[in-house]
Image (cartoon, rainbow, N blue to C red; front, side, top):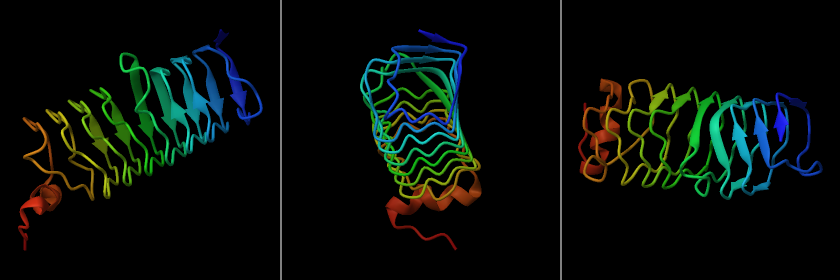
Length: 185
């Protein structure tokens, strides 16, 4: 187990990955196309790392913090569903997948969630602060008390999602009525 270690500019295609990381920092590391197995990342901080096209298969992301990371096409959908708790700040999550995960209470801050798949996610109390959600797939989700106040470019169907007490701004109204072919002037 790696405990309280800082990794800088490591290419994890070349260096092997440990089974457990606790309170570690990863700065400018490359995880491109890595297939994570049952790796446990607990209280780890990832800064400016590349996770493009990576896949999680039973991976635990417990109290993980992602900051300024590139995560294009990353698949988190097969992560350990019981220990997925993370925050994302200023990350590029284009074409990423969280399908079927419990993301309750997570924070996405200033992220690009372009075409990100949230199908069947629990997004209760999740915050999307200043996030671009252009063509994000948000269907069959629990959005109760979710915060979309400063999110933009989202389109979601209120008939396909549980939305009790979810928060939206007036600017987000077109994304809520688009499925009804209603024009707001």
